[in-house]
Image (cartoon, rainbow, N blue to C red):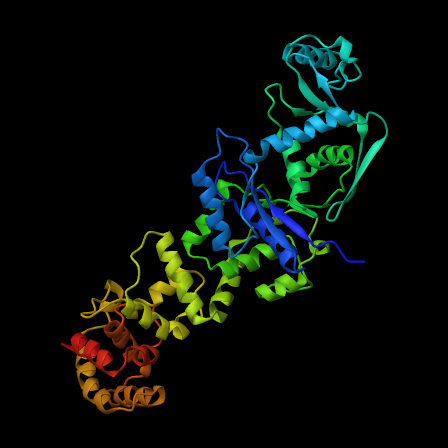
Length: 468
């Protein structure tokens, strides 16, 4: 018997940017599908027409693309499917699992006020639930309500939370279709998930209360329920829901701060999910290992230091050309000038010496200043202090020796060390002036790595400039 292919979905609302919590939800869905040769679908829940914008939709798509989360097919617009949602409500009406309710807002509020006064439940109990069509008022507006069970209990199995049971007396006859004929969000979600063939609904546990109400629609239509997995939210370091007071919360903000996407994927995967003691892992390992059983029941706390540590490790093992490509995307995202062809070539050549300790791209760029700048090198205030008259004189002695030296690391180090010793200095005493001459910065790769990247002619020319 063949197993049903896995289909997951991410369904953001374009009323704002892609939150880091939403990014993790998308990532979990992507990992679960990709690890099982399944499909990962994207649905834009744009039914709130007043607040949904094309700009936010584009920002969400860009954020997912930055994270490397590719989706199958075209993104689906929920608003464009309103007629299909309404069709299902009308079918439930015809099947007797829903009914027309003619109650006015004033009548509903009067019911609730009386219930509050008596200390009873304020869930609305419509008198139209079992009314005969003969009793319907002529031409009066109505909504279509679901007939929810009123006795017993309902249970949903959740892959993260376990068995979740509630009394049916806590479920109301929710509205499916408003009096203007427009469908409600709760109906739209179920119809879309069913029509898209979604087998696993992986989302934040703030949707947990919706699951029981949505299950009523599945059951009324005779549709198979998806597998539910409600993931605890992300908290800040203070144990409160992650928000602006904790700093950056949007995926785009982390891209603009220069975090590499591989490090962010690793960190977000590990945030609320575990595979033994593994902290650092590759995308291939994440796809292979990720399962729903590894998701914890408690909220995870966002830790920037852990994120930076993982990003440092991912930058260090990245392919040089891929790293350059992402670095250029970072420059574009932050509105910086694109690299020249010469800068690209220099960066690619220097990359092995740049990526060993950088946590974010601005650090890598700072270290790469020596290949991004051109002569004459203007030392910054800190490095300029190492270029006094004595050090300039030593650099002047060094240049003719470098002209004839073998351009290999050991040979270069031997020449510089020998010259330092003739002046009674250690190698470290010459490193500062050389760094100022070659990079104009104190933060750089080793002076010998810079010489090898720049080549003999450029290195000698820069040292001669500094010695003058």
